[in-house]
Length: 182
Image (cartoon, rainbow, N blue to C red; front, side):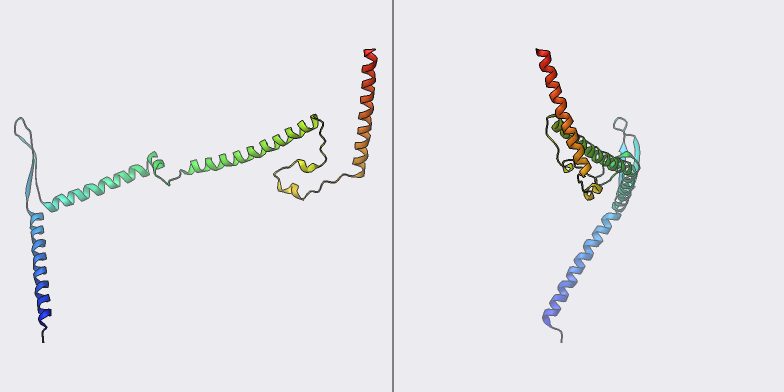
């Protein structure tokens, strides 16, 4: 009933298990073999420190030392200003200050734009250009978009009256200058 190929596979598997168990046994024996670690003074050959160690003890001490150093490094980073150097960490005070500064910069940019517009309008007026519409004065306030600027009849009459008086005053100034020259 047993297949000859199956018997060969079982024998190979048993041999492999035996070799693995032998390797494992050798490893365990080496890990439990005791070694003596001695620190001596080179001048007097006096023994200053000695310890009996096994491979298992060395792995245990190395693992504990690694874990303790990892915990100490984590505590050092977490509770000192070094945490600011960790990529992705944002200091809450610094974040709030950044947001506040961004808001101040935005408001200052709006004020500067408005001042530049006012200066441009004043320069246009001083150069003799007339401003015919209020649309040339723009602001960033959303409420101003709904306002429609229209000239009333009284406003137009007032403008004509002022223009007439301005022309008359210019004629009088010219006549005064001509009298002075003569």
